[in-house]
Length: 461
Image (tube, rainbow, N blue to C red; front, top):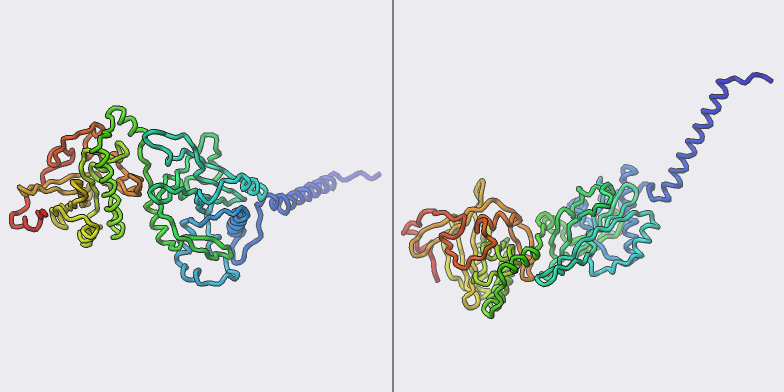
């Protein structure tokens, strides 16, 4: 027997090993990957396999929710931004095949949809079907704030977000709930300790850093990249709303602690005043919203919301703030048409403007206009009998939504700093004797109106 060449044996073994490795790679690519939903054929017009994956994941998700009769709508800001540029074309285009994948193939790690809670009963069958289709999923729950109140701090938890992951793409499904102020609300995305923080890039999710408040959208069914999907009828308006959607919850726990120290006034007069103040605030909100004027709870009304989640009964008025840049000449006639006569007008457009309207009985509506400087914001005050001017300084703030007396309304996001500026560090202690000229912590003298301007800047009706 001839002696076997060692080099030949080594070569044959190497070749055999290489063939076996190639077989394993092919087996994984063409069988296991397809089984787990990680490999997709390219969609028409896409530029890469990764583009194709995004489109296919969205298609499979839409098929999943359609099979369970769950109505969702697209709220992904990146895709809606692209759609908005072509909205007229999309509305009028036929349902035929698209020449290219332009929207759902855009580079991103996830696609975001919305679900109205009342349209779905949270059927567990959805998740079984999702798993059979290759999806991994994650549910994020938290306490239902709608059940909180003075008498009960409910521990009931509700689903706020769902994440469906397939291959390298994820679907973020945001659950919206109706609130008593006739608006939609979604909760924050807070992961529990045991949850996989690497499941998706959570920090990049657009709807999760904080709660949000939205008007109920009118929806439009369109065909995007050959997929039927509902979108907000006016994408640009929705995107604008999204940029200012942050929501602050009333602090019921702190309010309960406050009332334990200072029992609430349940007298007939207090109950009647709160009823009238609520009605006046609703009327003021309707009037200003119809004019497109942004406003917020200010002064004692803001303090009442922040400290005790209610109107302060001894305040005797409703206080609102408006940036002077949002002033409209229609404000006064609009309130008069709504049945609220002008009580006084102090200041002028460029300096210390203030309006007061007479509500039912002795309840009045005070509107303070705020002026922005480089490092602070201020509003003015005027003493009618002397012409003295006062200025109230606030640190700069932004606006958030909240729910107050069954109304969706703005408050300063930096509420504590706002309240402390006006009422000082002892804001938690009720004060029934209040002098607007000297009591506020942020008040300062601002000169005197020239006598020849009094007829214009001090008007009492």
